Structure formats: structure tokens, C-alpha cells
Length: 145
Image (cartoon, rainbow, N blue to C red; front, top):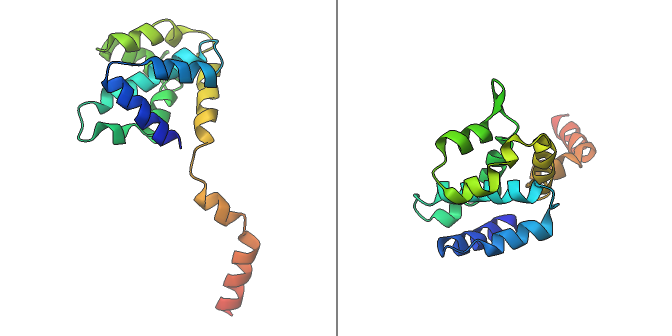
């Protein structure tokens, strides 16, 4: 579901329209900076997808998750997202949404909220199988005897 939504938001982005992304973020996430972090990270996702073949298919939950997680990963005292925004970023829209957020003392809180949100869409195939551990163990015991 989230991948389909990201693809649709990407289609708008290609038309130089991010109003649907802004509206989605503001309706879905707290408007305390979490929404701006989400918007900025999605814009990074979209800008990095643009040069690839069929770019809308690179707009996935997994790729977005990695970008958001960069806010928690550090090199010395700076997080990777700050480094990206301040040194590598070429997209003005990314800076617009992330410039003040990347140094916000609540950045870890905002990041955790977004990662928790994205975790809701994580495939849970293995977890579902593990719920049936007793029946799996019983099956293995009877077939190994």
C-alpha cells in the first residue's frame, strides 16, 4: 500500500507538484517537524530515483526507510542526513524542508515516529510462520522420527 502511494506521489513530483505530498504528510504525521522530515526524506527519495530507468518503481518503502534512518546514523557528531543536506544536496526543495530539521534537538523523536509508521507496512511473512512454531516443531518431530 505505501509503495503504491509513493508511486502516485512520485507521479505528481514529476509534474513539479508536491502539494499532494505535503498534504499527505500533514494529515498523516504530527505537524511538529515530523511532517517536514518526512517530506524532505521523500523528496530525497524522489530526486535520487529520477535518473534511473522507470524511476517511480524505486520509490519504495525500503528505500525511504533507509533515507529516514540516515537521520539516526552518525559520522562523528553529525548524522548522515545533515551531511547529505548540507554538503551533497543539490535539490532546493530538500533544503527547504530539511534545513532546520536536521539540527533540531527532537530529530531522533521525529525519526522514530516515521520509522514506526513505515514499519506498519513491513512485510511480515517470516513472523507469521514463526507464530506457528509449535505446529512446525511437531511436524519436524514426526517427520524426523
